[in-house]
Amino acid sequence: MNWLADAGELGRLVREANWSGTELGAMELWSPSCQTAIGICLRSPVPAALFLGRAERLIYNDRFIPFLPAGSHPTALGQPGSSVSELISRDTFATSPIVGPDGVAVEGRLCTYSGAPRTSTMDDIHELRAAVDLVRLGRYRSDPLTQAIEWDAHLKSMWDLPPDAPVDLAVFLRGIHPDDRDRVAAALGQSVDPAGDGTCDIEYRVVGVNGGSERWVLTRGKTVFDGDRVVSFHGVVLDISRRKRAEQTNVMLIGELQHRTRNLLAVVDGLAEQTLAQCKTLDDFAVPFRQQLATLSRVQGLLSRGDATPVMIRELVELELRALGANPDGDRVIVDGPDVPLPSRSVQILALGLHELATNARKHGAFGAPDGRLTVTWNAVTLDGERRLVLQWEESGIVPREDADANHVGLGRTLIEEGLPYQLDAETRLEIGRDSVRCSVSLVLE
Image 1: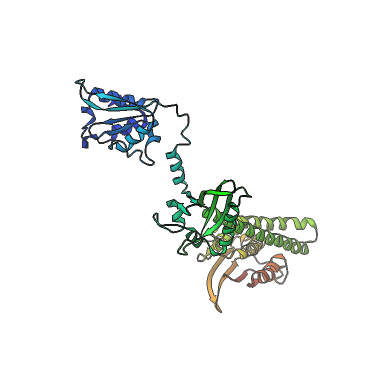
Image 2: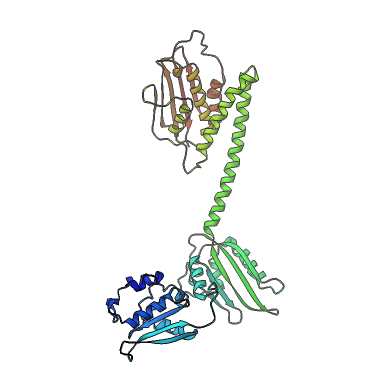
């Protein structure tokens, strides 16, 4: 059937259709006049349709699709075309018979559009209906003279009504959230006031006639006046629940961002004050303060994922160790414990504590000794009805330092022994020996 190879999408559909199951039979058996008519129809620059055989089987080209009942393409192809014939009779089409090889028998008829050029189909009723269905736009109209109210099926579904359910003002108000009814009634009252512009534009909540799940809708309506008399009121309703949820989420995120920014600035201010107290000169202050800011920066990358993906204690420990070149290898650096999510409020200050321990290990502890070993373990336990994280940091194999002062109060000790208990209500203990370091941290998880 190469004679349809250049006939576009409809040509392909015609070739693939099962015509053998109809009274027309297989396409290979169709008469030359019938095949010629099909080629003319499919390649026509104007809307064209063919009605073949006793059942008037329908074949049409791409430009004819807007004349079909909404949603009937491509299933209408090859079906009896009686319903389409009625549409054609109401439009301007020229009809030509398809005469068989004997010159007498009529095998069908070819209908081609002969009316004014259709420069645009944007206002076509079928396309408008398809657009309304696509966005699930509810439509309504009311007649003040007859008190009749009409809703389409989409609008009724928003009120949890079946398509054939009757509607009136009482049904409309009953489906609105009780807290929004007065506001909606006031907006409708203003829209029918001849002194106004007759428009109604309002967002409100709907719970349905059975008080079911809540959804947000946007109603836009227009009142038609004849002088001071209301002639009709019509409009559309759109479900905007997804947009409202997105807006509420954005408000929550902005609030959380503001909260975390204030906390972060407070942490930076506290770090600056504590670091300055431990330094004799500004040069002494620069390096440790930059390292602390780098720690906070790394932590912000974890916190930016949001509460839906909490920071796990393992990734926080490994993040700080790797930042100082200490990769957990199961030999010199052992990291072990179950998956435990951390409360977001605990992440920043705990990361700073881990950073101080790791920095001390690099300068004076396990990372600076050839036989040094670090083991970090943790577990989640319940103590006095509270679920807590208990973390143990143990360094061994440290080269003894004769000048080491186990009681020296530096920034790291201050942060661990004072900062963590104050900000997280944690219980901490730090022991620095001649050849070992042990630190335990217990903090509330919930």
